[in-house]
Length: 310
Image 1 (spheres, rainbow, N blue to C red):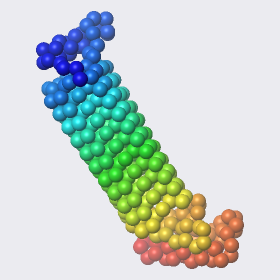
Image 2: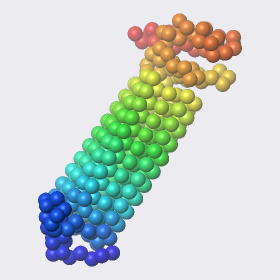
Image 3: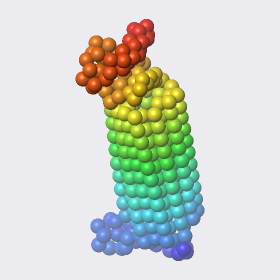
Image 4: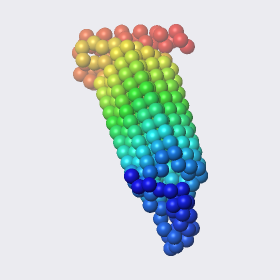
């Protein structure tokens, strides 16, 4: 680990500022790769496009700092204060950010592949378009964060707080969201194929158009969740709250959105449409007479509940 004195650090930052303001014609780009900077005071420092890969910045104060475009691959930022820092398009792949304060940071399109963000505070952070595939976010606070279009495939979000977060069109395929708090989260058109949502809190969540095929939602709370247009093919809803499930032979039926919608197999329609057309749909899908009868009884039961609620 390269030792850096306060005087040397000040000189590197000054020449870096000249390099930036002269359009890279004067001064020199800051190269702090592999530097020992733990507990360093870098409050509001200009480290735009700086080289900081594998640097030790644990416990450092980087609040308000400009780290946009910086290379922080493999850096140690555990416990660092990055409050409202700018990390736009920065490289943080495999960086250690455990317990770091990243509240209100700009991580738009940043690369956080396999980064350790366990226990980090990312509340109100901008992470739209960011790459968080296979990142560890266990127990992280992402409440109110913008993760629209982010890649979270294979990420560990177990017990994370994502309440009120925007995850619209995010890729969460095979992500671990066990016991995560997604209450009032926006998951419109999110990809949750084979995701683990075991005992997740999804009350009042927007899951319209989401792909939940093959996902595990056993024990999850889906009370008042919007599942309109969601793909529930082979989704595990065992003991999930806020939905009613029924299965006869191989076909799973699920009533959701306060009984306004029913999915049977891979077909989803409004309950009123099922009531009118279930016999024709069943025949078109080669259901047996007994299957049509049993699912018809389920559909009528749900419709009676729906009418009683109105």
